[in-house]
Amino acid sequence: MSYKVLLLDNVDPICGNIFNQRGVDAHQPGKLTEDELKACIGEYDAMVVRSATTITADLLNHATNLKVIGRAGVGVDNIDIKAATSKGILVMNTPDGNTISTAEHTCGMLIALARNIPTAVATVKAGGWDRKKYMGTEVHGKTLGIVGLGKIGSEVARRMIAFGMEIIAYDPFSTHEHANEIGAKLVELDELLGQADFLTVHTPLTEKTRGLVSLVNADRIKKGMKLVNCARGGIFTEEDLPKLLDIGVLGGVALDVYTQEPPTEEVYTYLKHPSIICTPHLGASTEEAQEKVAEQIASQITDALENKNYKGSINGKSIALLTNTEVQPYLELAERLGTLAMQLSPNHASTLEFEYSGDCARFADVLTDGILKGMLSNYVDDTVNLINARYYADERGLNIKEVTTAKGKTFNDLVTIRFEKESDYQSISAAVFGSNDYRIVQINEYGIELRLEGDILLYQNQDVPGMLASVSGALAANNINIGALGLGRSEKGSSAITALNVDKVLEDQEVQNIAGLEGIRNLRYISFS
Image (cartoon, rainbow, N blue to C red; front, side):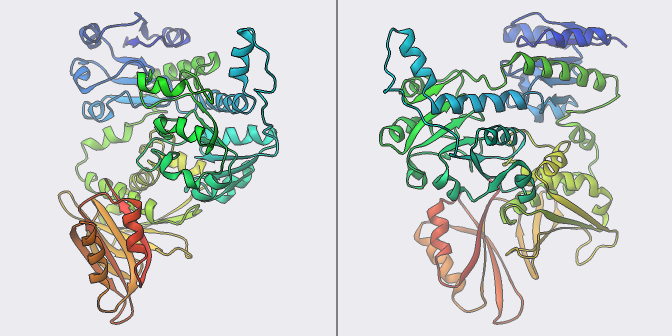
């Protein structure tokens, strides 16, 4: 069977060559308007894009024959994956193709920042010669803080160790063993911000990473720290950077990514600051990287069209599971439980045990993928899905143990996650109660029931009168309403556990107000928002 593929966004010509060599008819028409694309997309079985073309649900309504969308690169933010999945269209990317390119660009930006290279170049080209003005600093002997110790972060660490830098890293899901292999030391985020001379980020933009450096947390940052961001715009609060530089909190900033690309006029005014160097999202812009991802995506798409292999698929299992209504509730439960577990588990845990009892044990393999997807989605600088979740778990050194029992326990179907013994929360179990009704049913030895949704305050306390009143009073003082609650205790007058659904996303200070109450232990704020 002959297939046709549409190549957009100036993908490297090798992409078309690979398709043609394998008998796929590749068309590369150049830039198309939205209307032109809608008019022709129905002719094609597959398409390849980079970041310039946005694949919307509306566009996919015109793609009557489309079977595969390939992203020649990592990020798939420009593709409506949910819409593609609902239409049975496979979405693929090439997550490894630009790792080296981005790592090298990060290192280059770091060195340029340390030695004032861009401003010195501009001065000499303008006829100036002021050596004292551009006095730099050696990176040798300095501390580099890396947020996100995945593929790119690890490669940056290896390269900068060769420059004589000490590497500290924050990544809750990297094990100490993985960090030691690289030569990095894992620390908590506040410690990293307080110790690093240079900081580079290799993490997705989430509510937890947005504004990682801003005026709000200026007092936590080592004076004179130099920042590099080749990951996602918004991790550093752009409008705060000039002020942080002017008051001496920061010693320099290097940006390759921005909250909006190209940047807005307002952002351009910030970028004119003399201590900010910037490039137009060049992290993956090397001949080698573009050739590599173009070659990879062409091979992956052809394999998929010929039903040979689905490497790089982002939604392959999701498509297969769309028609399996039996597994869907358990998969949703697994992902939610993973999101909860991520916020309960101790940092750098090396071993996790997943137990499935009852009918759901038949789907243990895919449910493990679902749990890992829920756990890692906010900590990996790539789209985490059912296909690649185990890969990212392995990359961080996580050891996963699966236990299945066909016979149900207290519940017909139960999914349990167990952490290492030194954890404050050692195990958590959940079950499906009905349509869109997923509930925690046990934490540690405590029976407790609460829906896996919204925003939850979870804490341990002594089983004495007045504890709940104390917490609810503190919440009421901040106009925070309790939507639901679950209570559990080991025995009367002993230890107890409480989980509260609250009606808003909590600020850090609001959480700390509860943590500071007498008798409250091991408070965790869990958000599904």
